[in-house]
Length: 301
Ligand SMILES: [Zn+2]
Image (cartoon, rainbow, N blue to C red):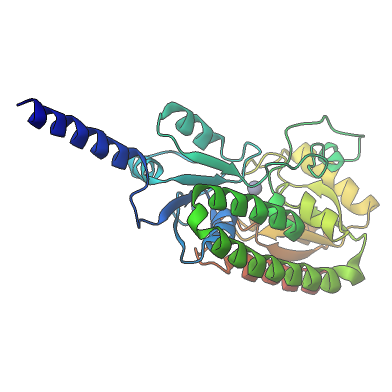
């Protein structure tokens, strides 16, 4: 009788342990928040871990409504990789409300002096704007993307030490690809150094800094919110005084406003991709950045 009870207790304890730990032979489950995070994580994970994205294709990472479907994905993950810098504030709230013990990795972790907090052009040339929360669009600078990849590598190695060497190998290969991409962008954009441009939403300050383009204005100060006529008028003055030649429109947004501005002020339109949404495949980031390079070369020449 006593022996049977002991066996039961031992069995329950062992079952309980198997529930909290990762079962032998099961791959690490990694959940990412949106496209660039997915691409970087996929390239570090290779086939050593299972990578799944939280947001369905086409969902805007700036604003997202959680459903039970995403809640299930969240509960099944061992590691969650996000951009950070409050881009996924909708996710922070949910993660805090669960008691599921996951590791949350921020691609932006460790960045400080590299972050852009105040974009002076948001004030339309009227002086420095107030310092706000850091701009979250770090992935559009391949150099900061490499920082993100290193953060992801460290996290996967820690969560799954058995495959540490494999993750390292994958990450090295991907970092070499990012380096190559950066070189192509640098060479391709070198003739346009210092060119004044305006963008649709404030997604490109890191990209512009990396490749010496000069952003002098943003059409939508708040993403998806149409600017007032007065604001557009002020922007027009900046476009004339700075002799702006091109406006960056975005694949993700309606082209109407950018096209209107382009007609009114004789600007070339470069349709750029913020890569916030798109097809979930490992090389989507590199492909999107190369498409951006071609669109810029066409618009700025
Ligand atoms: Zn954005």
